[in-house]
Image (cartoon, rainbow, N blue to C red; front, side, top):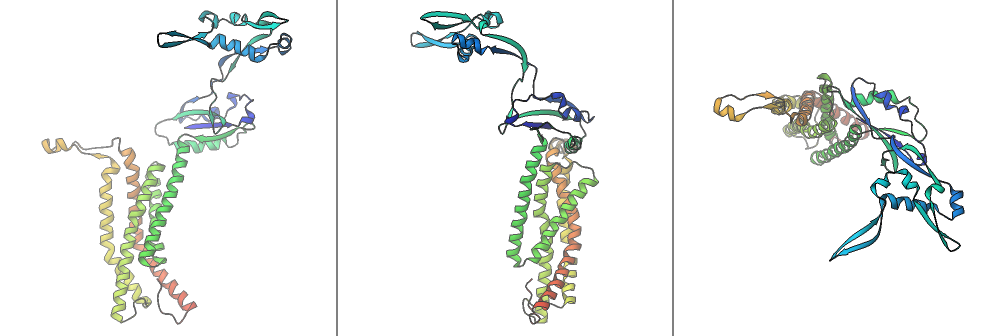
Length: 405
């Protein structure tokens, strides 16, 4: 879990009081273990204070003073030493024992000319030093300074729930002017993943709808079929809540997208068979191809279609669910010992169940719930659509007896 504080550059002169940062309040939660902050304010710092009036009297600029100190500490390449074809740079700087001695640094001479004479004065004549502390590093994101607090969560607790609780703890906290608080890390990744997968889900549903509309030459039937996807989503969240499973955003969302392509098959098979029965009835009665059937005959077709497709729909769902159970539970079989010693060494779990488990359970819950609703709700919705469309056509065009379904 990561909390980030963004400080815009217009407040770069302020030095935040770490004890006032709200995560110190948040880390009192017993479900959070350990916390680390990437802001080190205890790094020693030596500040060179230049007396500009004195430096001006001597005709010395601050750049000359800074350049002298920099050369003494970090060195300056003044020439090259050539041996054969190799060239070696010559660096000018103080010896090691003097570079870490403040007295030696302050006694460095700065040379300047006055009335034709070369004069040298020590840095201590125009500057002094003070000891302080500063930031160990300045981290930035999007050009703003960022302070980040990291922490771990005890095993058995959900990061999303902890983040929700921390947001409630921090919502009344008054941040200093210019500060912004945001949850990053896992929370930020989940939000990005959810946004991407939501778009993917909408695109998938749109493609399914377009294909169904072109195949059925109708808008009502595809909408009824798409309703089965909504039923499956209800089943997913209901199953996760009932069995108190963790909602893994990425894995569960991938499962929901895959589920959308599976559950529509049952509704397609059911509605397509009902349409086939209606076509047969029209032929028996000598009616036109798209003519409306009497409501009682259309209802018989809907009921008969549900009865006939009950077994294949249930068998398809059951076989899919049974096929996913080993993947969902992480069932492992040692085929080597099974074939040689007739001992399968069966066990459940493993590393892969963390990845495949949420996807499999998502499909199992959604398919179980949507299958039963498809066999009941879809025929009901189909019959209601017949009644509504028939009334609308009779209302706006009483002479028209042709269905546009």
